[in-house]
Length: 297
Image 1 (cartoon, helix red, strand yellow):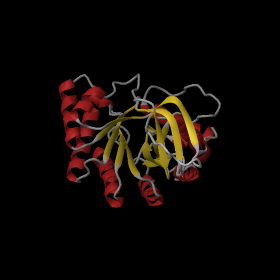
Image 2: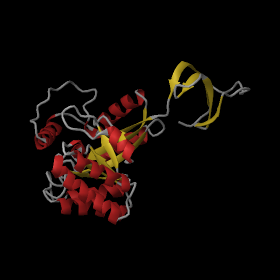
Image 3: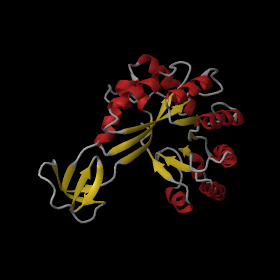
Image 4: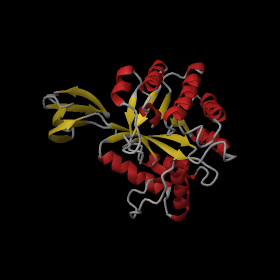
């Protein structure tokens, strides 16, 4: 993205039209005059100018973008979806480097210049997803920034060997430690969170945990995550993805969780799922926890 460029007639953040001078890939001046004739010029045609958008939650390694359409075949439970996905990865040609590139370029076309992607790490596919996405991001590094979360999609403790693979993913250069539903998938919330936060401490990395668990079950897991964040001094370095429990009908309990998230600077990611009670965005924003969004692939 380095280079000099003069962008004429654009409206920054919807404001009055102006010209923007780019030097070495960075904004150097607004309303620039007297620029040397050798600088390339792009006519913005009065369009809106925004910072690059952030795709805060997706799964580049297993996207089917650009592949033939397949009907939804999973059952209603999360474990049904996980098992269906495992089968499809064996049956379909979902090659991580190729497929991640297809979605990354599509996101870039739509204005996203930063992507956080959760990449599967497990005993069946090993580190092939991590390696494939890493090759892709190296190829497009001058166009889009991709941050990799090592993600134990099929369970961590219930699949012996996965924790060791997660550790190797950190050594390869994954930037974030991922986790998943410590009660419902591993059925050992203490063990799961000890492992996840242990890796974060070992490698000095942040944490991003998928928390699909509903209502009080999800609230219990969230309390445990909040406790560890506080005890380990990881304020500002933890994200709770989905966090469906914050949309529970017990609003007093949900509000107490939101207040605790704000105190520990734990961010919330939501996809705005139509079939689940998603976190109340306005309430979270007003209380203080950061709120971000993603397509989930």
